[in-house]
Image (cartoon, rainbow, N blue to C red):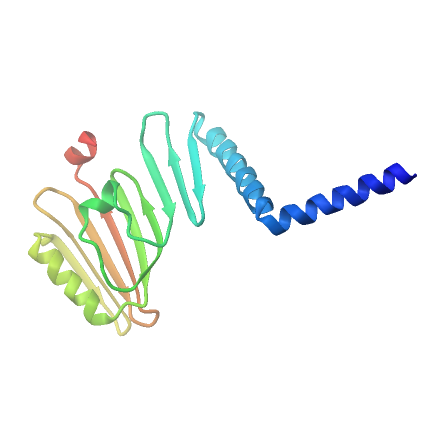
Length: 175
């Protein structure tokens, strides 16, 4: 009986010490990463390399294609590197691959949205343009001469900007 009590006490002390050191969080993160990797591999039928870093999930496929989801910064690679960075507000979500990206920012002023549209138009995003506006939201979409497309939506009520970009087929094939 004494040995069983000692084992329980030592086990309890170990668990408490692990949680106070932050080791438990690292173990949970590794378990989450492995489960996520297994699910994605089963869904895609292949081997994927998964990296979970805080609020950012990166998936690298067998062919080298990389997809990043999450994060609180403007992505500096892939399709997002082909888009002018929106330098106002706070990035709350980013989906980025070699050929497309979707970035959501909050705390954006309407004038910053309008200035960004002017920048896009100066860069040649004027082909096949469409625009929409209502009392509280605006959208602009266009294609550039290199056939890349962009769509930018502003929700004035939530002060949110959503930027969707797709690289042209030629650039996407070269990546």
